[in-house]
Length: 340
Image (cartoon, rainbow, N blue to C red; front, side, top):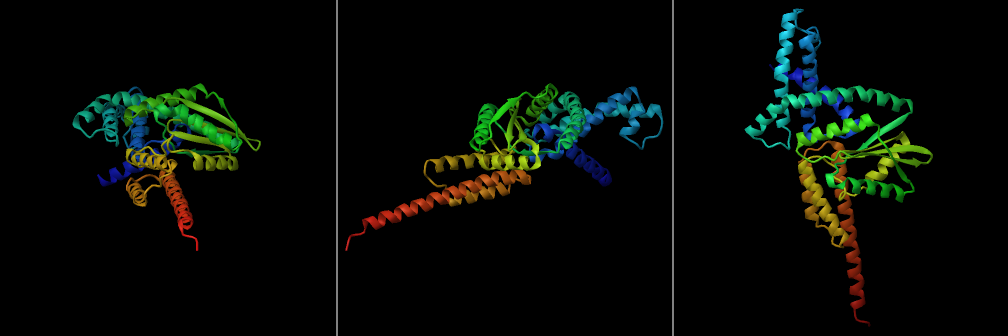
């Protein structure tokens, strides 16, 4: 049993990386605590599609489980068993993601929906795994680099997000114009967005926009959607655009993390920034409390760095306001001293 669990964990980890590359390339990422669960759902759904084929063509079952004897009746029996059992396993796994209520009724509902989940996720995963190598080959041929800025855009802020990115780039002399996304990419994203909305119980906007700028004679393509801002350009150009946007995106427009716990920290950061804009520094103990809370969330390094960078902004701006206040108070005290 320990060996079986070790093998399954290795398969899930490997597929999680593959599925992550496929989804992140176009569609961003899932909550950090659910990466392995999403990877397991992907591999189970793909195996389920293979099991359906193996019911009609039993030799396919040898690919799914290579240690089976060459017996057509046995192979077909294994394929039927997998076709029946894997979708409920998909449903149980989905019922365990962090946003789902931990109740018996919720698990039973997801077990019943397992066949629908396995069908949709299996087909989407297959399409993504087939599409990504083709797109990557094109990027390598053009010597383009693909960089991602982890964001999470609330459903009612997609237009604000686009306007904000356009304003940030324009402020630095890089005008953006919009180009249509290829229909297959839009279709895959809509399918994945609807599925993720159901799995993670949160609204995900299905809009996907491609904005293009000319930066020092190089084409720079920005893809904006609910869970990602990707930058496609020659390496140096992509790095410059990434640094510019990472420094200047406002956390009051987008989240920089998926997880509910870390988004609570981000909302507190936004309240601090509103106070700073009103001329009131954020208390040091409040900032220290948010830093401590962020440490306990368990984010992946890119997301942790993005949220921590916003806390640094709060710290620096607050200290600047305190210094200005101390300077003004000192000047007032000098003016109030009696003349000798």
